[in-house]
Length: 469
Ligand SMILES: *Cc1c(COP(=O)(O)O)cnc(C)c1O
Image (cartoon, rainbow, N blue to C red; front, side, top):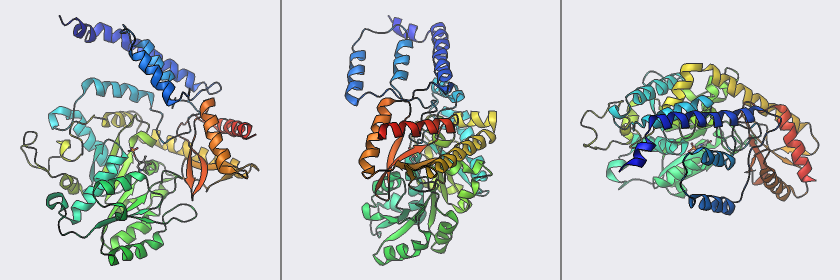
């Protein structure tokens, strides 16, 4: 009667399918590492894509998933391609496709200790290790959550819980709250503040300098203005680095300001905080040890599949206070118990995504991350030098990370460069994106793949020239 369930759970079928799927993925990797004949995206319009899968979904049931998986690969961006220069998502270390499969197979939900014994302990080990690495001190610890967006929201909630009782009282009799951020901050900060009811005027955007870093010298003025208009500032956020241009804010200066007014100091290091692994580049986050909280995405510079994000707290106790709710059917013991991770995160059931990072660190240590950061940053700097040395391209600003904004020079730069992005995408060898820097349209690359070389980048420029003509 349960024939399908028996087939679906059959160990021999699973083993055979698994071996074939690994072969498919290994072939895909092999093809991607052949860096002369690469393709990054087979672009189809949303409607074509929808038609394709609607038709597919209506077909008779498959006996094996191989064809389906190949079709999914063909309709996805290949992050393992050296031509992948788009958004800030890591090409996943192939090993983490395996640790992810293991994690999914176990499907331990993590919210309560027994449902993630290994995961909960590993989470503690990894976040404590990272907190130490950032110099947060002996009381520091952290949590792992699903993405920088949720990490930033959780950090702002912790900041609010440290100075108000809104979590309990609902904010009656409170002055309107506000946070200070760079005008270049990721939109997730703005969104988090709005979710918390701060409204548009609760996000005070501090202007940036010509390198797109927050003007820390203006913080005092913006703070005083906010206070004079009746607001209560709960937090200042530093970007390490900004998403659009990869600019690192001066964390030392921001921390001095935060200390002066006893404000919560949060660092949004979703993309760029892993420079801490690089002797060459860790100066970019000087001052980060003063932060009350730090967000670091593992799925950006740390080579794991999305989503997986660490939120580190200087004072481990604050992690407990953020979501102090009683759920008696889940927890009967003391609230401080680190091993019931559901108490500290927005999620209830939560994937043990830490297994990926733990596996990487257990096999390769910090060294793999140092190699990755140094390789990506060096190539970005080299690319900037090439742009500067060319007559037909220009930079938006000097890159401070692996994000470079540039454009083909022209009378009508915006519309020409917009066309270029479109044509590159439909051509498919390279995938790049775009952004606005100080209101102007620019092409934007993030070098995420350590197997991209300067030859590939020169090829990209040639392709752009071709399209521009
Ligand atoms: C990517 C990014 C985020 C959002 O993180 P997700 O993991 O995509 O939710 C937040 N801040 C910065 C600076 C980022 O680069």
